[in-house]
Image (tube, rainbow, N blue to C red; front, side, top):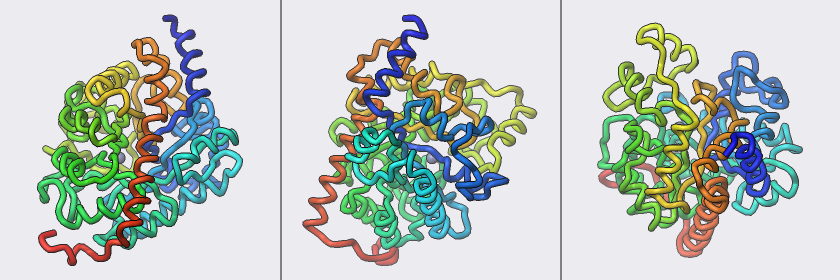
Amino acid sequence: MRHETALMQARALLERTPLLDGHNDLPWVIRNDRQARGDVIAYDLTRVHQDGDTDIPRLRDGRVGAQFWAAFQPTSAPHPARTALELIDLILRIEAAHPDVFLPARRATDVGRARRAGKIASFIAIEGGVGLENSLAPLRIWQAAGARLMTLCHNETLDWIDAATDAPRHNGVNAFGRAVIGELNRLGMVVDCAHTSHEAMRKVLDISAAPIALSHCNAFTLCDHPRNAPDDVLRRLKDNGGIVMATFVPGFISQDLRKWQAQSRDRYGKAPLAADPKAEQARQEARQGPAPRATLEQLADHIVYLVDIAGADHVGIGSDFFGGAQPLGLENVGCFPALFAELIRRGLSQAILAKIASRNFLRVMREVEKVGAKLRAERGPALGRIEDYPGA
Ligand SMILES: [Zn+2]
């Protein structure tokens, strides 16, 4: 099929079925922008940011219908609970600054509401349980503020959950970690195992009363970065009803790039957190020669593989645009139609593509909401801090 024909079909598909993206770090980009310094109005999302990857004109061009914004806290931040609140606040300010563009979305049905109003459904995700500071109370405050998904950890193992890119300490997850997952289930928030160790993914699949998400992960078999999901976890998503959301992070797509990057990483594959990821990449290229580029076509390989192993009902998209280097063909949020055009050329049916675009995630979210309502009828809030959980 000609490229232009596939692209037209992809655009038409994404106009019928909204594209839901499970992970975007724009709030962190706005916070660290040298001029705007966290001021949403000063950053000005209404203009195209050629040096960035996310702005309103390109969200529109990319047919994005629903977006999970990450309220990210690096594990090393001196004030993690404060940082989490500052990032939630930043997302609420994005919503408030552009009421004509973003519909504050807190339920699965809000995606349809946003579409009918010609808006983009804006969801809040917490990335990194470090902001809990080992207490369950912040979780309920985050939920009350609108958060509907929590990525359990970031790149470092916490006091209750093992990270993919750090030394394990809990055989996956400990007693307090189980309480966090139980409370997320009760609150109707999606439990997200992107960033947890493979063993933690398995444990969370054992524990969670509701479907889980891997909000920005690819297939470990195709690229053996520890952030990607192994086949046994992917297969278990069928029984769990959960979802793996393919991500654009170059080092999680291309095995060649993964090998190139490994030279500057520790044995767990962790990169030092860079204030300026593009400058860091440039420094590494000066040492090692040009980095192999990941491509849109390689990401399509991952998606076809994920559909194969996890099943067509368990795959979505979680771009993880974060202001850093991106694969060829996936440079900014305007790229989603091009990705779907490639998937059309790979022979995936319109029905499967609609599921990948948003139907699968919305099913997960409806189920998480249902389980939450049931659990809230059965039990009250879990009390406590980590010290109340023996063995944790
Ligand atoms: Zn992440």
